[in-house]
Amino acid sequence: MVAIRAPDAVKATYKDGVLQVVLPKAEEVKPKTVQVKVI
Image (cartoon, rainbow, N blue to C red):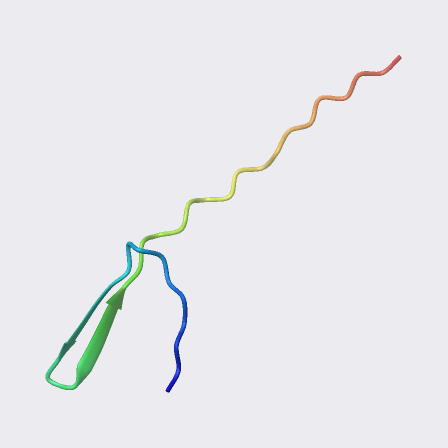
């Protein structure tokens, strides 16, 4: 048996021998900006 951890928003159904798993779309990673002060 295989077990994996998944977020609470995951939904799964099993019907007629087909397992359907619905995962929420991951948020897009936004680039970080760093302010540099030159002395």
